[in-house]
Image (cartoon, rainbow, N blue to C red):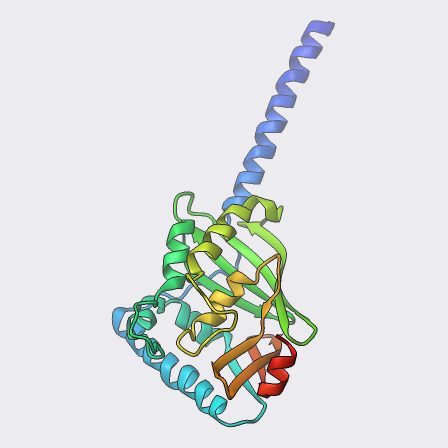
Length: 255
């Protein structure tokens, strides 16, 4: 075989290898992770899930807050996915809105602006995986998140890994989408601390705390009723939020 034929066949093999590699990468990126199973609920089931959220998460949480004691509030992976599938119904109820302004549905608006939908969560030891589907490409993007606490007063959600389908990608590849979501959930003239009218703040706070600057762990109800998230534990199938009371004097010291 002469040199020209050798070079020619070499070029064909190289092109074929590149095409094969591209096909494999596309296949890996297009294959959703096995754990991505967003709940598909009927309208009746979404309404029931919204009321379950109010009765078994919101009401229980705020009843505990009224007592000046430390407590732990736990949410299971199954319940969380049920609530994620019912975000529109939960936003419609707006059970904790105090000022009468329409501030519900911030999570839905943020996802819409970022071009994603159908969120689902997987909880494993020390890690939450948040999964969404891109609206245009119809690919599943997964974010591996963990919680880091600083000085007892600040929390950051560390972005450990990002995957498109089952293929790892650099976090910078989704930085713009994350920033769009952050800007969408931020409120104008927002206070440093989170108030009870925003119980969906567990999700909005997770988005705002992703990646860079830590956010305050305080939940401020009024001058005399201040609580702080001391820790968040993630175990197989459940998330536990540890909350402690903060005295006005301690609050002044940390300002």
